[in-house]
Length: 145
Image (cartoon, rainbow, N blue to C red; front, side):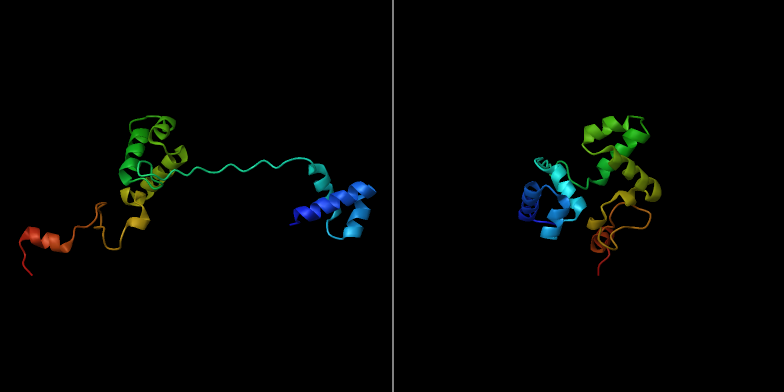
């Protein structure tokens, strides 16, 4: 990567002598191909990159809850609504809905849960609801410890 000063020096020397070969021999750093590229792009301005607007608010989280995902899958693939209209309605992309469906078909509702928020040993086998606390169960059953 060349600095702006090096590019400007090379272009200035090229305009003075008019030869790409002489410029590369005198300066010793740009290849002929690179110098031709600089000459071609001389005077053009690079467009600025657009900033990505990532929405991560409470109303529209980056990882939506399972209920939102299941509702979208239900509306699209069971009720027959178009994926485009559902995606515009809920505010997530169509690709997200299709990936949610793929995960759901492969692993059920548990596959749609955000893995970062699931603590070990909190799911009962065959269930998607978190396991209740053991002390709460004992209190409900009247077991004294």
